[in-house]
Amino acid sequence: EVQLQASGGGLVQAGGSLRLSCEVSGDTFGEYSIGWFRQPPGKERDGILCISFGEKDLCTYNSDYLQELKDRSTISSDSAKNTVYLQVDKVKPTDTAVYYCAAAEEDSFPYYMDYWGQGTLVTVSS
Image 1 (cartoon, rainbow, N blue to C red):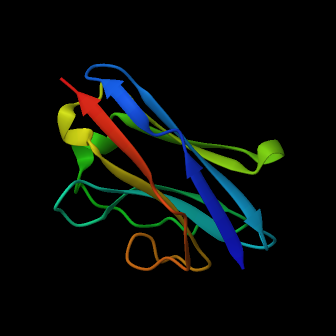
Image 2: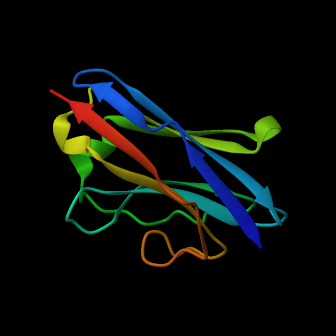
């Protein structure tokens, strides 16, 4: 089992950047992916970016949905800290959402994730 702890949310001014962290613990041996999602108020949760760990690429999903957001976003990892990051630049009020990280043991992002973190709220002020 994998545990995920998302953090870094808060109030951000429009035009600035946000950087979220997802600390991963538990059974992280083998292959898995970590994906970042967001859920704006009153809307569905959508996948943003994914990063794969292990020999197989578990992030083969390719869509231009939310492409404008993806173009402003970067996913990265620090293996020494067991942490995956999401940075979003030039944030807009429409980026206001609860952001989640999640883990999958198959190439199933964004449709199905095995484990979810608790979410962190980002509010972008205009």
